[in-house]
Length: 237
Image (cartoon, rainbow, N blue to C red; front, side):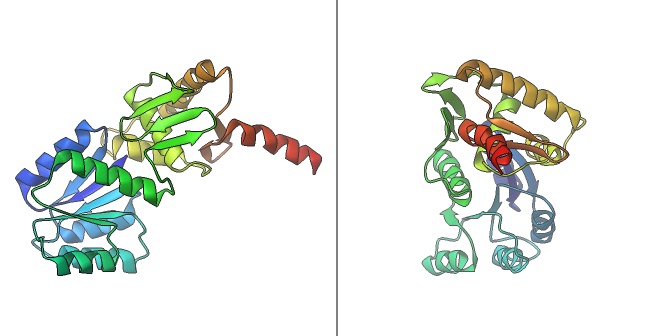
């Protein structure tokens, strides 16, 4: 999961960044609203965590401009301002949630997971595809209740595929979500991760195919029944 954090207080920013990274998230952080606005428009994030009291432009203005620019990335306002009218204004301007400081780290993580799930059209923490279950909260994977042990990068790929199930994802998108632009390896490393992930899923499911290659474009997660039905439908037509 890739997060953009816009928070001007250095100590608070470092603390939040540590919490998110310990939960396996890739975090890009900035202290300025203008930077957050430009980065948020330029890159693909799962969520933006936004403070209101920024030194250059107000966080509410950042939110308004993001929505005016048709940026649909979910936004969690994280602010020390507790007034009810501000919460109402924030939600009305396009925020998906409003959490006040000080906050409990477990609540912060739970809200982030819930927002990202809802934005992707999933109502609970477990995303099911065929017999495959991906638990976003515990970062675990199982097949019919039997755990499938993945590396951090393998899980990150499967999590992104699950959140955007049925959508073709490019290798560049995987790199951005796994590395956040920092020390990115070559694109072909994604093929290696996908190959290893496929083998583990095949072993756990009796050779069912969940990850489909879309030649020249990337990869997509589908229910094995859908993957098998597609060629048959093409032949019938």
